[in-house]
Length: 95
Image 1 (cartoon, helix red, strand yellow):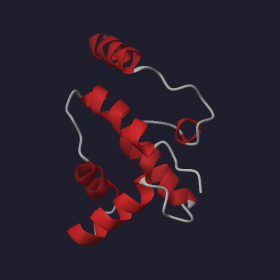
Image 2 (image 1 turned 180 degrees about the vertical axis):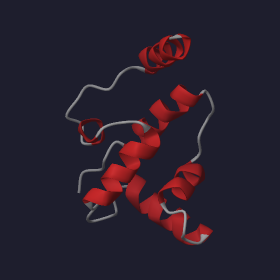
Image 3 (image 1 turned 45 degrees about the horizontal axis):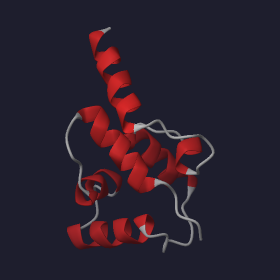
Image 4 (image 1 turned 90 degrees about the vertical axis):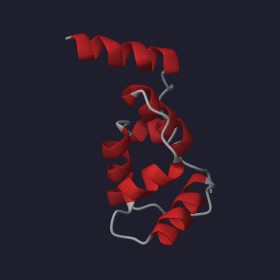
């Protein structure tokens, strides 16, 4: 299975908020009702492409929480560079 671009999405999210975000932080956002060990395992499987199937609600949750779209996650759009992301975020905050 080809992996979704979750690592890149996390980098984009980190650049937007200006703080380094760890996998465990994203796992808490994606599986808030799960125990820490289950969050860690689910995140590891998702990031490493071990998860066999990702359902639509999970894709939507990832997009919503990390501020990317599904086209980005599936590699259908060219990712912005981190510099462009930071610049866009800075310009948006000034508006």
